[in-house]
Amino acid sequence: MVGVIGSKALAAEIKEKIACFMKQKLDLELNQQKTLITNLAQDHVLFLGYEIAKAHCNTKIAKDSLGRMKRSVNGQIQLLVPSQVIRDKLKLFCRCGKVYHFLARCNYPVLDITCMYNAEIRGLYNYYCLAINVGRRLSMFKYYHYVSMLKTIARKEKSAIGAVFGKYGVEVPRKVGTGTRHIVGVQYETKAGMHTMTYFNDSLKRVEQPLTEVSDVFGQVFVGGQLLKRLNTDCCELCGADCGGMEVHHVRKLKDIVQKYRKHGRTPPDWVVVMGAIRRKTLVVCRSCHVKIHNGTL
Image (cartoon, rainbow, N blue to C red; front, top):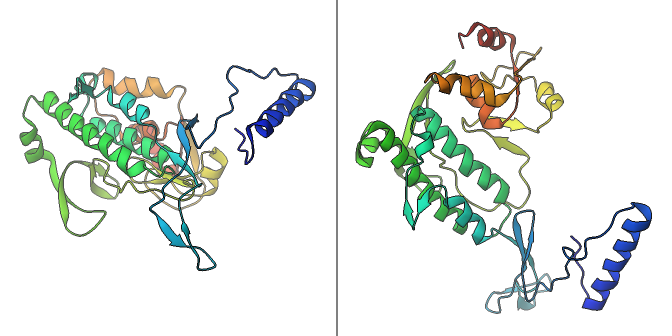
């Protein structure tokens, strides 16, 4: 995508030069039907899942660096979350405008159900956190998504949503403001003790720069996506130990190892859940955790 400040004739000239360069230097043919010239003042552009627009608002006025009053928004290029993306995502959880349970997940343990829903909304937010309207768009998705999780757990346990709150409800501090809110959470045990996993409770605020650290559904932070970078951190991705001499546990197919436990109705161990959350066939672990994985005692 090329942004041009100028006339349509200038944009057409640049397009032709790009086509000539691709043909002569790269031996590639530019698709004329898909390569479009769009005026951002009149229309939006879809690119890599984002909607790119040119802002226009005559009511927002602020001082510039010289102290002059000017319209502070007009002409700025903005990234937006397309409304169609949210509608498409909600098709899995809604029918005719009403929230439904996710029937395919009803046979999984409650911890797995919570992990799946957390991974979905966390991944959606991590991708669209640069958009200026991420809070407004994802807050609507979050409401329907959360209710769908409650109904899925209620369907699994053959109870009402109120009973789900009574059994799994916990008080957590609000991310914005003071006080607490009642939210469904599931307890799980690790080497450090008992922990509680709740539904996604982070604020849906816009960020100025792309994320350099991405956390999984357990709140652990994974820096980078390359195995070498993960090894150089000298930090176990399961217990958090910083003892050096890390080892790599790997599986042939991530899908097979996850289904191995679900097929027999068993709760996957922590290392399987973490692998599924970060979608990697490898885990950088300490020697102690590596031995326990192979012994089946983790």
